[in-house]
Image (cartoon, rainbow, N blue to C red):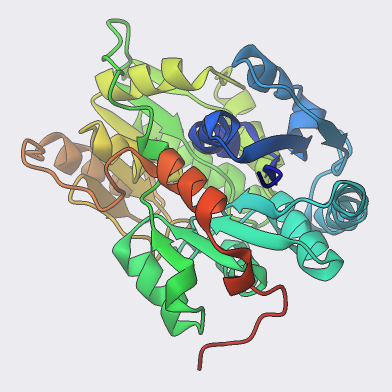
Length: 360
């Protein structure tokens, strides 16, 4: 009987971990696979690794990247270097059969680069998506070009990966694992009218402060829950807007609790992918503000608008008039984790050579 395959899954943020959790669970429970779970990035700065252990998972390694209170692009570059070095050393010692990463953040990029250069196969979840972010789209596509196997969230994303020269036989439309845990979610009785979740887009702090102030003014007077921004460049400007408005944001929340509040809310306002993916599956309208999600597939539950008090206010009115009874979303049937674990266990490694070449 062959040895179980070692699957290293790397998680760097609370939000990305929420999507990875069904994959982690499926890998852990799948015969023929052994899980190695690595926490890095903002988990180790903000203490969100505790959510991983509270879910019953064992963290096998911790690889520091960011340093507390050091923000901005230069800090991200230094963190990226630390991540490549630390993760590369872990992969060299433990020799995983696959390194699994999700999305487009620098933690995923560091893991993919360390694995690809160090001689480990990379499996990428949510490749082929489009989302402008700060450098999200270029980082996501760079990870895709280093990856050996792709688990796309939608048909369109799968086709983009194939057009990029990835071999069709290694690109699977599994759906998004963000959908996997939604079937048991019930709307919270104490859900707010509106959830505000607006992250920076890498502009200077004054612009980020002004844009967040406008969104806060547009939702003033509503019963609202305001989530804290991520730590990307420009986050200090967003936080300054919150301080000036006297708003105390929620820094972290258990995923099931957030999803329950999201399902019960009338609308989510901001620029988080949760407004496009999870909210659509839960039939909650989304006002998508600004360019951060530019290019991403958007169900009819999404109303796009530019920054600005009147723009956001008008979009909220439009979102409240949407009929989402027959809404269909493109993000799968809620079995992505199982599908991903199955492929990781059964793919013939001889057909997935470490030495990549484009299909074109």
